[in-house]
Image 1 (cartoon, rainbow, N blue to C red):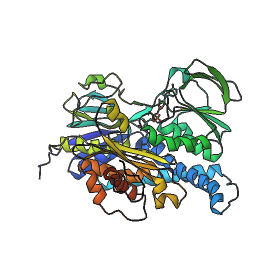
Image 2 (tube, rainbow, N blue to C red):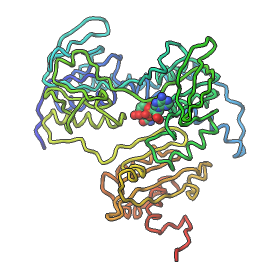
Image 3 (cartoon, rainbow, N blue to C red):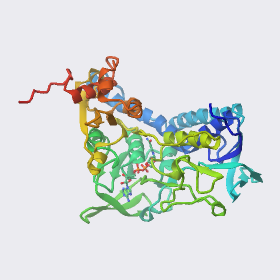
Image 4 (cartoon, rainbow, N blue to C red):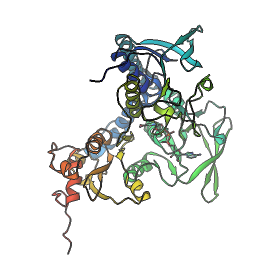
Length: 474
Ligand code: NAD
């Protein structure tokens, strides 16, 4: 067991990375101050990100299923939406979880300060508390976990209550008749789905040639097909050249790849074109911390910045901007401060888009392998051959393994379908444990479950799948 060095540390930012790091540091015997402007820990993820969006996506799925159920012999009346009640239910979910974290902070004996921190020097913070008072405190180490905020692009800078970022969209002030979603990434598709289910006619405009540019095309295809039915229009290779508040709506000028332009008026606009790191911390220039070109704070594998007394992790240090990356980095940073021999070097960080169907991937993607000229074998199992996928009438999914042909190691996993976000964890474990396709093939998976599709993909790799018919060659 490594000896733990006890320090007096401050963690600036109480998102999923910051609070996890704080609780672990306290458990390791450190004296921990956790600083955040919110009443309780939680950060963007709990207050205005992952958690409220998933609560609303749950409702969206229920509404969509109530429409589909006609095909199964059950007909429901048109759902009536009580918006204030829906909003307060979502807010209660947030309150329950953030309140719980407030209690946990006390139980872990973390000193939680509601306020904003500014650097006086590498080891001193001036904290402006929520009541306006200030306090100057010194620490052995300071950890920056300030996260990120929605990106704004000049063409879409417009001071109008009809313009929304993800925070505004989650506030759910009304159910607009029409909504323009700028950006077909995680947020645009998740929140676009929520509004479409509530009855809004949604137009999605994506600058690149496909939705979810980071994911393999065969994983995006079933989602795109379903979204085409849910949304009014999906415009690819299109940007928004300008927006103007014309009183009864926002007039947007949409510009296609070939220069073709069209003007349309929308009740509301959601801008979801990426996020920017919150690295403009007052006084940071008084330290030796270096900030790179895209605004990310530079760190090593122990999450230590160029200033030996300062560590940083999460969205503020780089992509992927995901809560689970931040919480793991946070643990590494705290252990490094404690003097343990650690490094943040995962083989796979899973990505999940919580649309319906969900899209999830981990490790190497097929597209990345092609771009890097890396030879891989790809084994795919279509869900139409999975009993469990057909029972809820959702056979459009696909599970695939990306396999190194020499070693037969699983180097990537991709899944599209209901519950793909839950299933990808098995893929991450396989990659981290250096599992061979044969290990997945020989692992008995319960029947009937969607998890079998991972085992069956491995069977496809070896040509032993009994659920798919492949005529023998030659
Ligand atoms: P994103 O990077 O996922 O998607 C942004 C999209 O906007 C891209 O497809 C991009 O090509 C497009 N785009 C950029 N400029 C454009 C323009 N001018 N016109 C039209 N399209 C344009 O970003 P996001 O959806 O804003 O989400 C931000 C980040 O938040 C994500 O990258 C992710 O890290 C995180 N997030 C994760 C989850 C999740 O884990 N399920 C959910 C929401 C957000």
